[in-house]
Length: 357
Image (tube, rainbow, N blue to C red; front, side, top):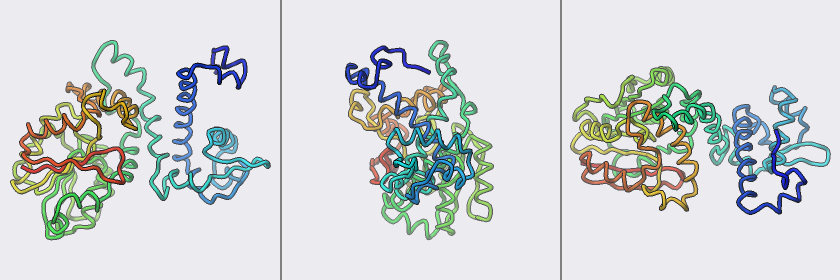
């Protein structure tokens, strides 16, 4: 592969002669490539292995991880030239401690390398998305390999039970006493499982359209007698006055008809109940998101997944950047008379809407 631009291929120094915009595109190209390599380091366990901060040769790292030396060597080249790992005069590589805090499955300050997996999840559907530009329609959930794997890992970053429950006074006491709880679009049920283990007197239900995700959720929750998982198209929820607490985690904006789901949730909620909806934080107007630090990611992941899976089901394609203003409007239309929006310190990506009748 080559970059067919004379100022680039004439020499490294010539890159500085590029206009700022073109130089920025070179930086984007490099960072896009590094994102893929970060994902690979995450999935192979290399970052977790390198957390010792001891410098080793590629052969040593390959032996320690049980990976192929040639692939490890090339990956280390990508990481060293990106400034992710260090390389000494002897050709030994180490992961600086300040970088190790955010890299790997067991990263002590939360795994940023795990988020890089979205690049690999989304890239394979690029041709289908291009076809949708020309023909309309959407790309179905079934086209996305490892979607539930990565969503579950993302949940480890975003779901903090104490912080989330702390948004509602006395909620912990009610859960300890025993209430009925529903998670709509529960995926593999990680959040619900954590709560069910902590609050054995409460009863927990998870709905999700994916039979595969529900099967995994049931398997992981085996032994918990206060939790059940149901394969269900949540557009067809018919529960009424059945739950004291309802959650959604990143599950509203990619529904085919989000307004229908919000009305279903309102109907399922008891009169003194509460709905906590975690969803992407942004403004509704694109112009108001120009300074949003994650806006390019949000719009792109919406283009490549959230919007298109809704359209694939004949939906409206609301998109991930539906925004706080639109969310408040739709929640009011669904019958929620009181809506509070919160941001949690640990979660830079989401808003938390606490909704009551």
